[in-house]
Image 1 (cartoon, rainbow, N blue to C red):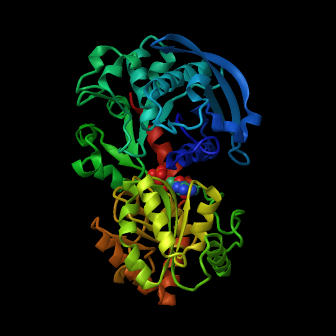
Image 2 (cartoon, rainbow, N blue to C red; image 1 turned 180 degrees about the horizontal axis):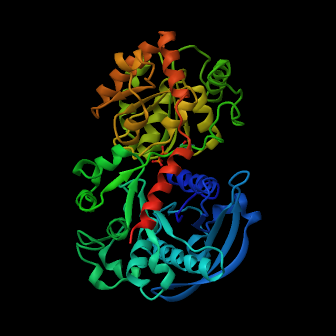
Image 3 (tube, protein in one colour; image 1 turned 45 degrees about the vertical axis):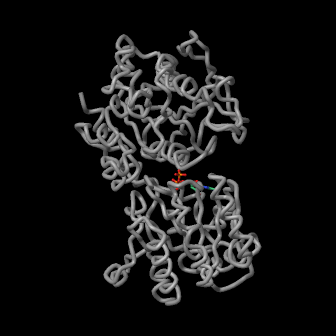
Amino acid sequence: MAASEAVPYAKTGGLADVAGVLPGELARLGHEVTLVLPRYRSFHTRSHSLRIVGTIPVRTAEGLIDATLEEDLLPAGPGSRPVRVLAVRHDPYFDREGLYQGREGDYPDNLARFVFFSRAIIEVLEFLVRTGRQLTQVVHLHDWQTALCAMYLKTEAGDRGELQKMKTLLTLHNVGYQGLFPGDQFPTTGLPASLFTPAGLEFYGSVNLLKGGILFSDAVSTVSPTYAKEIMTPAYGFGLEGVLAGRKDGVFGITNGIDVDSWNPETDQYLPARYSGGDLSGKLVCKRELQRELGLPNSEVPLIGAIGRLTSQKGFDLLAEVIPELMALGVQLVILGTGDRDLEERFREAQARYPRQIGVAIGFDEGRAHRVEAGADMLVMPSRYEPCGLSQLYSLRYGTVPIVRKTGGLADTVVPYKPRTVQEGKATGFHFDELSADSLLSTILLAVKVYEDSEAWDSLRKAGMAVDSSWARAAKEYAAVFRRLVARR
Ligand code: ADP
């Protein structure tokens, strides 16, 4: 498993949760897993246990560079082999404040950094063989940062026996991020010029790393079945819809799980009180404390939470648009996020204007994310597109009813409130389809109406809390894909 971020080492988004948790789940199924990561500065959390195990030569445009490998063993639970973590250390590239960007935006040498990492993955595969640690069968890559590894394996491993047989799966976590670089930087990839064509890495004159990965991987997946279908259409494919639809074996979706140990309302150490589906009284304590934490008066009115990157993908601009109407309704709104300065400013202004109804926390704060999930009555996710989404899965488990746009993983994981689904006790939340402030608002209005009917609300919460979002299910689906790949000639 190779990724540019994974919990507990480095995280900027959902990818880190997947890459950090899936290896352990696969280990629990009996697989031997090595996780390869860049050794960032932020590794401090577990750096005490890292030990140097060797060096690997990495080819770059500037010649060979020796990278240090630091190893950690991540426990996978009783009776299971731990996950071997190999961190590729090359401080000039990775000992930086951010993973992909600094104060001035994206690092200008990101192409060189992730070309380096993608090549390093191959050297790690060889290192594992050479040192008798592991003979890898499948290399599971994630997103543009590791996509090139599939190209290097296919085009350069010809004379490297063991590497030649390895199969690759590329998982797309968000097709909106493709690793696009100016065409004149192509030589940095070290690939032959014959690959810089529309049938290769070229994308309207630019270098597109994700495209290369899609073309050269043995299989391509994404993180929910609906998103897998959506990205083959112009509305969601960000220009790659043709390349994706052109894959003979298609693109399939495996819905992400969640880390059910860290996200468990019965044991969550971030919460002021704990609770379960059988006894929700602790949830009320969480609501009161959340109101206090964000300077809101204690009140019984519905509290709507929103967590996430403040970007247009997440549709928070729609939420900002309907604030006056929500305020007139008397509800409270809690927003935790960071991102677009514009949106941050809009939410801050709204808070100043409605201090008794809006609480805004700008920043990334894991503990607070848990407290919002627990303390809110509803969680809103008005995403324009959402490959899978994790926050709505946490909400379900925390008895917080999700209000989501019907797209990607949100459509797959939230069962919408309808007469039939309610009658069958299956409804877990609310969907809205049309991407508009009006449509969002009318769905929140419906949710608030249902909230007042405590029996109906209880049924929604109970159904949500009973959903199995564990990684165990997803890991089994991935393992089946790996077996199919290995069996393929
Ligand atoms: P994406 O990966 O597109 O950002 P996901 O919903 O898949 O969206 O995952 C987002 C993850 O990051 C969730 O675990 C969510 O709780 C967390 N998160 C997002 N913003 C914040 C924040 N401001 N503070 C704490 N956690 C956050």
